View 1 (tube, rainbow, N blue to C red):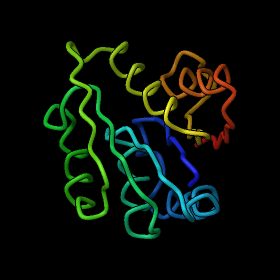
View 2 (view 1 turned 45 degrees about the vertical axis):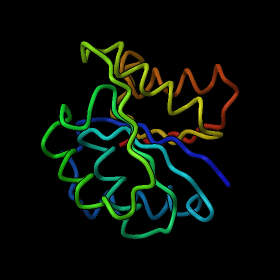
View 3 (view 1 turned 90 degrees about the horizontal axis):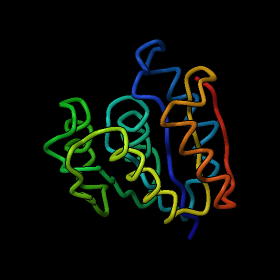
Length: 149
């Protein structure tokens, strides 16, 4: 079974939902057959990709959060609730406090369990969590697909 981590910007409102549906059809669908996806359970790309994967594929879905699901933004909790019947596992890593280090640790946890990472960054700042996750995947010798949004 193929294992894939999805990482991306929490800022996704600069495009319409149809844009993301087309993007996911082009860049997630080819990897979704007999696959297990790890998603971060946050707003933005995490929630959009979770919703698309839950409705458009039969892939296994794991949602990982740095603390608890209840600590995630309302938009993210709603996405998880809507996809609940399709989620194989919710992993709560129990981090405290919920700071940048906790989110990076969550992303590394997902990458460590995947053979591939698909990233949806906004811009070129290598300081973003998306780019840090892609860099970590590279250091681990994992395949990466980068889809700028």
